[in-house]
Amino acid sequence: MVAMIAMVPATTAGVKMPAVVHSEFIFDQTPFAQCHASTLAETPAGLVAAWFGGRREKSPDVGIWIARRTSEGWTEPVEVANGVQPDGQRFPSWNPVLFQAQSGPLRLFYKVGPDPARWWGMFATSLDDGRSWSVPARMPIASLGPAKNKPIELANGTILSPTSSEAGSWRVHVERQAGGTTTWQRTEVSAGAEHFRAIQPALLRYPSGRIQLLARSRDDRVVQSWSDDDGQRWSPLRETVLLNPNSGIDAVMLRDGRALLVYNPTRWRRSPLVVAVSTDGERWRDVLTLEDGAGEYSYPAVIQTADGQVHVTYTWKRQRIRHVVLDPVQL
Image 1 (tube, rainbow, N blue to C red):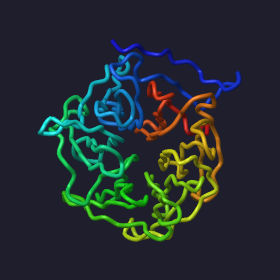
Image 2 (image 1 turned 90 degrees about the vertical axis):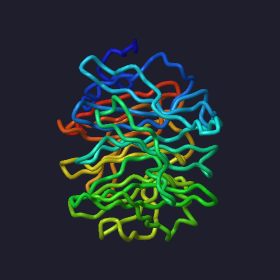
Image 3 (image 1 turned 90 degrees about the horizontal axis):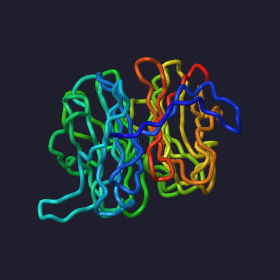
Image 4 (image 1 turned 120 degrees about the vertical axis):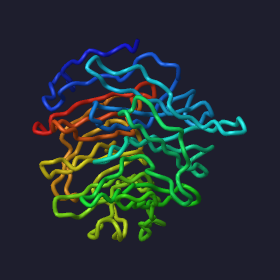
């Protein structure tokens, strides 16, 4: 049985945070020593979360683990994918990304390889909302799949997958899959890439139709690029006002028209972990601190579910994955 953490009102220095509906750990005791890089999706049957877990990041035993949230809480985590090769050699697995399109199966993207400079993209699908999974397959040649954060789906069914390469220099790009096809077309975000060395982008589509790309960088800032043609061309990368310690971020466009970002607003450590909102993607306001203690609180994933609530998962000290539910009206 998975030990569940009681849902209690969240506080910071004794002050209640009304935006936090509840907070819990997805699991308590597990077969792996460390975990990281969670992802989250809503299916018709409820939430599904995934992450990588093993002895430590980069160990060959690291696999992709999944849990589903039912009326009784989170199910016991199970390993659904790993890096075992046909010849018996095993590589670590990395950065799962769950994605549920408007139609079709639940998709799981992840990476396999000795390190981020040499990894390759893998994917699997589920026809039963995450209960069972297809045999994993390799992404098409020259496609990696999303690097950390979920794709977005346009009104015409086109899927834009935010990804990046760490082979040689760090570069961000977007992989585009037209509705009803199985091929991916790669679009570079090249201008400014050599300066900022950015990876792991997140995508936001504003009510105006403009799409913003936000990414971590080695320049102590979150960087951005914009597209006015549904992701076919991108403006040069430039800094935002947001600090970043070269750590993963995630963002979601709320149905009320605001952009919501979860990130570490520091230059060098992965704490605190903060929620920020913006109406234009340029001016951001920190509105909630999720964690502000010693240790690492990082690599958030964020979605808004059909009931309007915002769900965040993130790495908690590399030991567990925390799940927090927010009321966006209170932000």
